[in-house]
Image 1 (cartoon, each protein chain N blue to C red):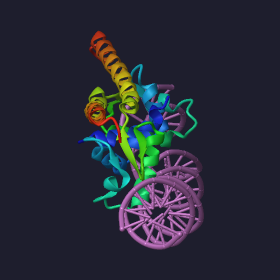
Image 2: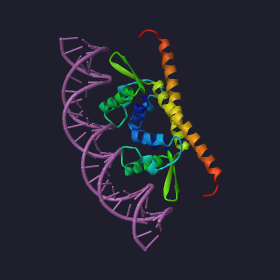
Image 3: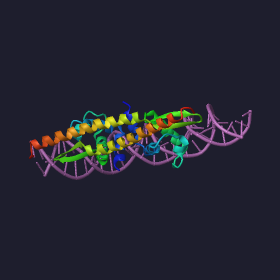
Image 4: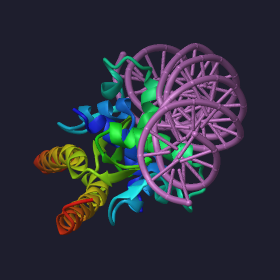
Amino acid sequence: MTYQHAITALADPTRRAIIDRLRSGPLPVGAIAYGMDISRPAVSQHLRVLSDAGLLTVTPSGNRRLYAIAPDGIDELRRYLDNLWGDALAAFARAAHDQAKRPKK
Amino acid sequence: MTYQHAITALADPTRRAIIDRLRSGPLPVGAIAYGMDISRPAVSQHLRVLSDAGLLTVTPSGNRRLYAIAPDGIDELRRYLDNLWGDALAAFARAAHDQAKRPKK
DNA sequence: ACTTACGGTAAGTCATGACCTACCAACATG
DNA sequence: CATGTTGGTAGGTCATGACTTACCGTAAGT
């Protein structure tokens, strides 16, 4: 049921950029924000949205907070799409079949 | 490169509802809009966004226009997520490994 | 040809959310 | 304890996009 939040979160290009930075491993907020053309608070807000959506995990470590991609969250969305894809293929095949049944008209 | 449009299109709940109506097969605009709590023009606009994103195909048939889910469009997004998921798992495993290397601190 | 069904486009309104600049709390370090 | 570093929160602005009604084109039926 969480896939809705996940897809909403991933719809934003800035948030996808954040996710991309975390592809190689966990990072603290400062490192994520460094080199991006938005302010650090903006990054914080995006991180909030992403972790609320179950796409990131946070592990406070002393002064800082390490953000990492949560494979489980991605997987939820992946399953939704797999399901949709399956239905689309089935509908496609059925439509093609019906089409073949009556060639003219 | 089109997956960005696809994910933006699918981020909207109304558009997901439209997609859901097409899961069982192609439908004309009127049938899609029937029973939904938004106006038909609104549906038309959503259909535009969805087909621009490569998620739907349109086949004019006489007076009407049949919309159907395009499996290819879905697949693009699916691949993006599969890729992301793979990276997330790898990063996760690496982090776990590094963690094990130095148990304390 | 006239009328009805179907559906896309135009123009305008309104809510949402992405961003900014403060500001504040918590830990670390001298 | 004082000071710097790290990062979340508050409040406000502004752009985007999801809706509406009104309108127009086109295909079908009478």
